[in-house]
Length: 321
Image (cartoon, rainbow, N blue to C red; front, side, top):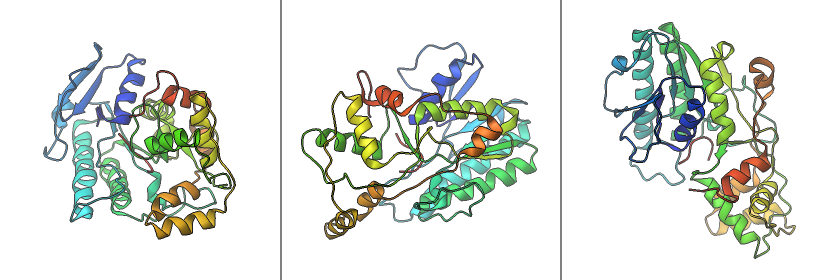
């Protein structure tokens, strides 16, 4: 079972799971009108915030990949964002885990976010680092993680928690289209971003869904907290160059002190955007290779070709924005 199956990551995961030729139940609010024909795929319409149980959809031994969520937004104008995120991200997770336990499901794979660690630092985050969520979205994610561990675990259901960083790829929203737009500008107008030396873990959606499939099917993933990433960390200038290269161009970036960039951004009220361009957020991924023996199948260059090269489409976001 896949919840949130029509979202950015969900649509890519369905394509990935179709290669396994396993029966997949896609739980959605509304069945897509342009869904591809697949005899192994069935859509079921349920509003995860409004139903009390999905036990009738589950069978003993099922694996559930829980993607449905209220995602991180840059400017949240909800008058009570804490309650809104809990209503969308925590309570449906509790209901799902209870339903899984009652039905005898085998495993719940929960997609969380690297934002539960905080807003970033130079040293890589490790799985043992304590959470330091800085906003309502991240707080709802760590609370949902606790629900997965406690409710699923108490009910005899195996669990796996996945905390992705910034997720990019065809169909991505949020920061990725902004980076693509910035890269396009930089091919025509030189930008003062050449001195940024941050390091960021990022993950291509094709790599992430390959890992999610592994977590759903591999016995070694049971009881694991997983930090996914592409094979190498990148700086903001490297990301812009990779996007430009995939479009057969080159980003024009010249040196300029990042401290002055941040000062200028503060004057015009764009500090948050500049922080995302200049700060680091790194994940220690050794555990993935040692325990799951997983390596990301797509390189950064291949990922960018699929995302913004010929035929690539930028266009629903999850993970660290």
